[in-house]
Length: 359
Ligand SMILES: C[S@@+](CC[C@H](N)C(=O)[O-])C[C@H]1O[C@@H](n2cnc3c(N)ncnc32)[C@H](O)[C@@H]1O
Image (cartoon, rainbow, N blue to C red; front, side):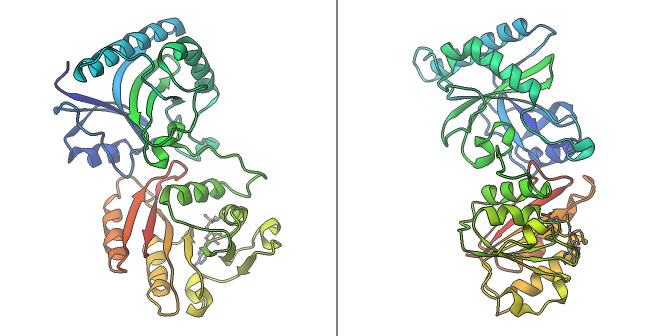
């Protein structure tokens, strides 16, 4: 029995310091870190996992293995699982129960900042091969799932394996609840029907799922900063009516869609009545976030508009400028939202997504 708690966390490369400061308040201290990967210690036993804007995944640590040989990793993993099972069942006063994990999630920590050299986070080729090997080795004894890297049901227990590199594995476990905790690596598994127009397709898809906004086919959505049209492509795929506001040209595949209207202008120059009837707004424009907030405030504070929710992509630009997030929060509070969530989505570069709900 240990009298402390240990956690393994993943984040975007460069966000480690932001992770460290966000968890300090709840008693978690940084132990070991690599770009995109952090372990932490809390002196309290059974401390709840740390949470924070920049924490992409979090799991209670079960151990680690550093070796060139896959077979040794599997031995180390089995030992960690036996120890975990013995600790949890003796705490519950029962014998070890066998298959204690509902799902197996295996992924590599980020190799590069998102977007650099076209890097995208998630389950890569190496982790897919490792997942298959682990599943074949321990599935019968420890896992209830029929394959690795499936989406976990809320409440299910996940065995996590993070490859810091192919010869250094960390083992952990978490209980799935919210969407990011249900997705392997907290990256939404999504297979677009058509080649997305831009990577903003994935960002919009993730923001919509994570926010939990009840966006329905037929709803009118405005996107500010809509060109070339990746996010609009996702909204149209979901059956929404879309107004795209952008001085730049839209990709013809979106421009010609019968449910799409392009307003070729800067958002601040449009009359407020333009937004009448719209329920949702996405903002992904490359203007300064403070200026974006002025534009959005002018729109949502207007009596002619009645937005239910906003998904705002806000560029921080630099992980040393985190105070900005608090300033943006304070500005948005003045709009009287019923809720406001902030997260660095898995697909976000050095930016965060604000989900602001009005009703
Ligand atoms: C990151 S891109 C948007 C990508 C887009 N959301 C997609 O899904 O493909 C930023 C866009 O913001 C637009 N933009 C800049 N200032 C703007 C403004 N004041 N109003 C509307 N769009 C603006 C730019 O023209 C540019 O196309």
